[in-house]
Every structure is written in structure tokens, then in C-alpha cells.
Image (cartoon, rainbow, N blue to C red; front, side, top):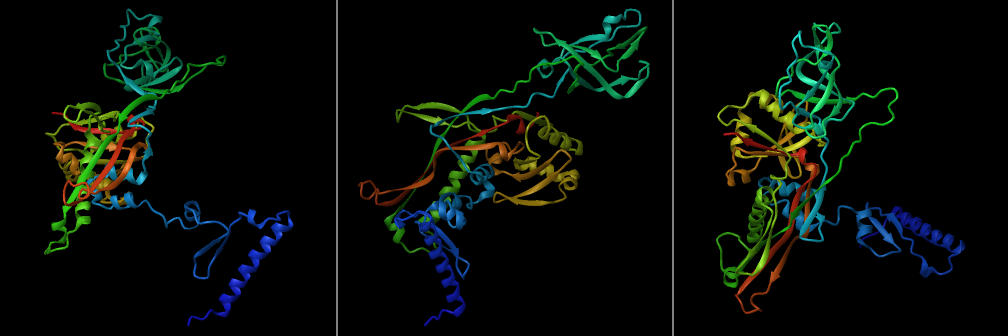
Length: 464
């Protein structure tokens, strides 16, 4: 027989006595009905477990005292079925889906105000004979005038400013001050901070070529200014449709009882079906086209989800006829990490040709330092730069869809899965219904994906 040691007897006695004293103190303080007591007594056992006394065991109690006990059985199993083939679906399941009460998902996204624009026409400085005081101001035709407001300062990239004498070029870039905007065309009325001397006129705006980049800097107010131009950042409403994904597995009774050379049962078929279903869903989540169509045979509407590929706000283009260079890789990372509200850690998935191009680069080996990282049940290579860190992974979905030389960079913090019907299975009794002598199981999920902060995500496409 099992004997309880004296030490364990003392522990149990102390715990029991403590519980009795606690109940007695509560009764003395005004509780006369022991049935009204709902205070739970929780104490550890000698073996390291936990005993809860005084209330029924609920999921909330279990999550508090034994958080690893209860798990989502369906998703826990799904995420372990060939995760490297479906990175988008894998990451979204680890993050968890938001419940959608409808097949139509309305969501809002907010972009950062643009920090730069480009000259859409050149500005030509006057010659020494025609320069007047009016040329200390200039009207610049730009691509996006809404990026600037009066009192903003602007740095003109690749255009040098001048020293105080106005004749010696400075190491600093040309800086402009915005006086106003043309309400109809969006053209900027500016004056030069470190302008050029032309003839007898100081502070003139020098030549600015078409395509020059204008970078918005801080606002500069006067001593008497109380107000400034307003800043508005309003969310933009977008919409996506949940798609009903289904997969059915059947096995006849004779197949079930037949002798087999290897173990291959219904659960093996179910696993293969889940993998095929996830692979198909991955393609829809990436490249699907949002639409509602009518099936004339079923006489019902079919809801199709829109892919996140089309929701991204940026696009990086490269020439497929040229090898990638160190500078090109840095330019790509600069574009994906700047000018948005994204994080400094993003995921790059791409087809075999694009990933092959990256791996052939000596710069890739230097930047990545052959580091690997495991996250969300996936194994990534890392590319580290001063702009941020990319987790790189080959996606066979790109190859299947004829996009082996394409890629997609996304911020996992701003990718959201919506679920109208969570992933689940339903057994069909086809024998009882008199349809077929089979065991049948139907897998179903109605879901879609959306991107917040579109400019935090970027497509990589070849430019032929």
C-alpha cells in the first residue's frame, strides 16, 4: 500500500486548517449562510499541481491556473500540416482570426501623409539681365501638391544650395519654404532659404530639374503664429468578401476493411485533403479577385475573396535581364521600410526564380550573414539592413501561379484574417441517407484577408 509521509500529512493539515480559518473569519464578518460563499480556495499540491476548491472548474479557471491545458484542437493540428508551403495562411492562423458576422467584411485603413513628391516640370532660373525681386519666389509644378502645406520646409534632393554670398555652392541641399499653394493645380509657391544670387538679386530659386525629389521637412512658424495648416488623416473604407472553402473526403466501407501493404487510413486522407485545401486557399488569399458571381446551375450566388496582392500600396520593379546588384537590394529595402507606418521586421515571400536571384548575390550573403530564424512554425533566412530586417521564404504558390520571378513583402502585424465560419469538419452519414456506402467528412471555412496600412506592404515584379 501507498503510505503518506509525515511531511505530506503536515502539509495537508496546514492547508485544511487554513481553509477552515478563512471560512470562519468570513462568517464572523457577517456571512451567516455558508451556501452563499462563492470564494474559491486555490492551493498548490506537494506534486506541483493545483487544487481549486469552492467553485466548479471552468475554462476561465483553467486558463488562469493551467493556461497550457486547453488548446484549439483544429487550428493546432492544421498549423502542423506542411506549413512551409502556405506561409500566408500559416502566419494568419498563428495570429488568430477576427470574427466576422457577415460574408462581407468592411474595414478601414489609414496611410501616412506622403513625405515626398517629385517635380513634374522643370523650373528654370532667370538670367542676370532679367532677374528681379520676384524671382526670390518660384512656382513649382509637382506631382503631389497635397503632400505640403504653407509653412512647410522642403529639401530638394540632388540640388545644392548656396552659401550666404549666394555664389558659392554649399554642401547642404537646397531648402525651400512654402508660402502657399495654387488651389486649382496644386502648384507650390516657395521661396529659397539658401538660394542663389543672380545679378544683384539674392535668394533666387535656382534651376530644379524635372523628376527632382522634394522631401517634406518640419514646419517653420513665425513669432506671432497661433495657428498652422490643419493635419488630417482619415481612414479609407475598403471591402472584401469571405469565400466559402470546402473539401470533402470519402472512403468506401470495402476500402476501409481491405488489407493494405502500408497503413493508410481515413485520417491520412484527411491530412492530405487539409494540405490541398490550405494550398488552394493560399492562392486565393494572395491572388484572388473579389467578386460575386451567379452559378446558373445551382441558381445561387458565389462569393469570391480578393487577394492581398492587389491590396498592397507599393510596387518595386526590376529588370529580369540584369543580375541583381547590392545597390538594387538596398533600394528595394529602402522602399519597403520607408514612407509608411510599418514595422522594421517584415516578411518576403517569392517564387523560385526571384529567391534564386537573391541567393546568387554576394551582397545577399553579406547582408543575411546566412542567419536563419524560426517563427510562426516557419524557417526563414534573414536579410538585415540599416532600414530593417526581412524574413525571406520561398513560396511554391508563386511558382504554381506563373509568378516565379515575383515576390511580396508584407508586414505581419498589419495582415488580418477574418473568419465568418471557422475551420471545422462535419461527418456526413451517406449510408443512412441511402446515397453511398462510404464514410464521408466535409471540411469548411468561410474567410478572407485584409491589409491595414497598404503602404506597409509591397509587390516585387519584373519589368519586361
